[in-house]
Amino acid sequence: MNTTSTPTKVASTDVSIKPNVVNTTAITKVTLVIFALLALLPFQDAVYDLFMMKVFCFAIFAASVNLLLGFSGLLSFGHAAFFGTSAYVTAHAMKEWGVTPEIGLLVGVVASTALGYVFGALAIRRQGIYFAMITLALAQVVYFIATQVPFTNGEDGIQGVPRGKFLGLFDLSNSSHMYWFALGVFILAFLLIQRVVQSPFGQVLKSIRENEPRAISLGYDVDRYKLMAFTISAGLAGLGGGLKSLVLQLASLTDVFWHTSGEAVLMTILGGIGTLWGPVLGAAIIINLQNYLANLGGWSTIATGAIFVLCVLAFRRGIVGEISHRLNIRL
Image (cartoon, rainbow, N blue to C red; front, side, top):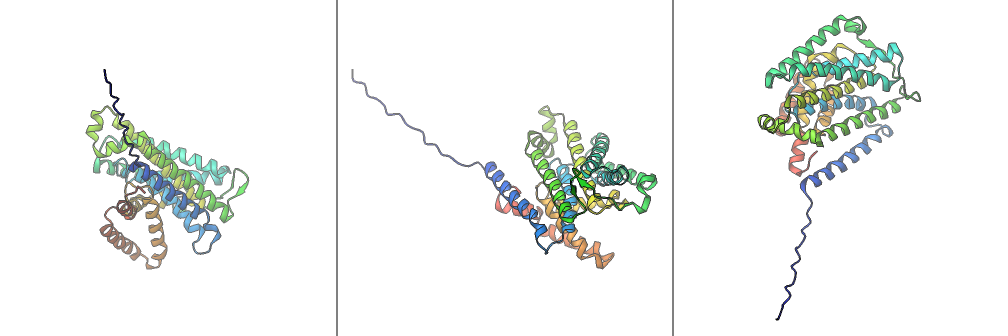
């Protein structure tokens, strides 16, 4: 019997890099380059340290709004309540209790997170514009309380907030030390948001944003996920507010005013909703415009609005969103 051996066909292995791997690698490289450049800023004279520290504060604040709006589909007009509450609590702890800056920040973040949990439990029962209006109304309650309680000093605010010594060793009254401390807080906040967005929890948030009824049909407790996202976002907003009180050594009523919430939403939209670097760029642009247009007085708001409209018309996805779309990478 003649047996012929059939040659075994070896399947060709077509190794291709998946798009999400490419995107993850790209954003990691971009992130590392930007962090390295930011760390070198104190060694040059073109950009003021104080300006960049203020950008870090509001970038964290805008990123917290983007975590809700961009990745959860929830528009909040009340995040100034968390930003301002943490600013007041951190400033009070630093000035009256004499704690170190990391403890002061931690106390402020805990206060804003707890407040965010309460607000979230009330607000997530509604959707769309009703959710936004509830957050705005609750934030105005906080603003009214801030005008009445003694420790906020009313319209004078808490001034001359000491920066203290980080870990009891590094004096933050030194501008360079304060800059690196602010940069470190910003990097930690950015990496936390990146981890949340890329985690299974973040994927569920995106599914809720895209199709909430379908997420419910798959068995997800949508309200619980929304509450968790809102609470995390409130804590991050508080981190930005507490850092701001250390950087500018001031906590005032402006921090809890609804206009501050609107600025954060504006930064997010300008930079790009649903992007990681969009709120950061949006914060840098808005803070820069506020500095350069300050001499215009009341017209500065109109000029900022006009520039915002032009940017939205030119970049429908936001500046970073448009760049991300054209280069086919996630930023």
